[in-house]
Length: 182
Image 1: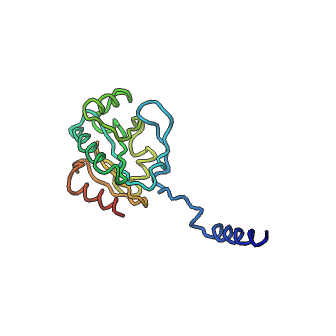
Image 2: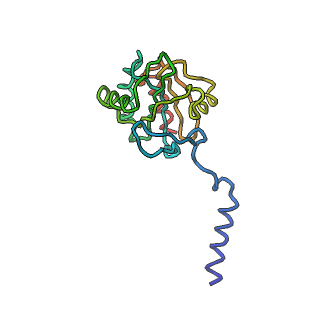
Image 3: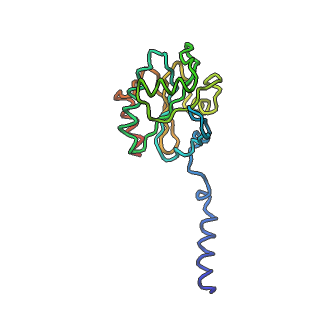
């Protein structure tokens, strides 16, 4: 009996002594919980740990709104390889997201077939929202307009892309592919 317990005890001590084993593999920037666009259970962004995450502040009445189409294409193209896009409506810039969460969801589905996760509209200035505050702190770049993008790699590294960077541009596609390959 002692022969069986001794190896198990050694294994336990080895695992317990390794400080890296007890740490979460969730990048700190994903330690937030948000509500989905349509009523439902709050979603822990930590569920996306180990994936490449593109966070985008979106708006329905913006000159950049057609980027929804490119975002959906990007999502469909790379979803199976680990990309997830998180759309987060905000009314910060030009009052271009006046709709309710239900209206936003209907608009996105009807006009662009959006299937990537969408979250409820931010009701505080974007820089004060916990997720965006963390992204801004990591990159030093706050959104200047709608459709600003933050690419989070599997290890929690973050890169920012301005609103003018199209979802299917060589710049963003290359960054997504690089993050997926890591």
